[in-house]
Length: 114
Image (cartoon, rainbow, N blue to C red):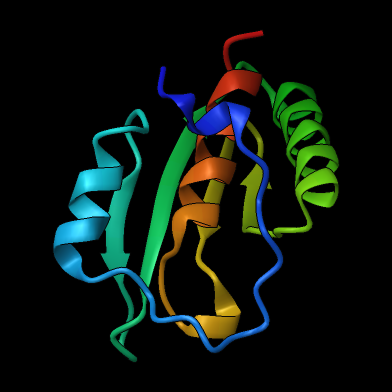
């Protein structure tokens, strides 16, 4: 696992340039299994789907994600249901990816290893 999980997200209120595609790919190598997705507005996101045994396990995972997101001050978009959770991360203030997104992804991956 990368050293990203030891870092803290830095508040971002804009004025920072989002990562370009080469920087995105460099950081993508530091997180496990996160896809890079671009929406119709050309905004890049990190996306990952997690699989669980049932609804309760999915909900427990989402509760952990919520706790970490609050601690980091960086909040992903979350979709979950019976046996799955899907997380989408971007830095909304800059309409793209920053180091914060990869830090949060790394911390979320650690939950799944508990």
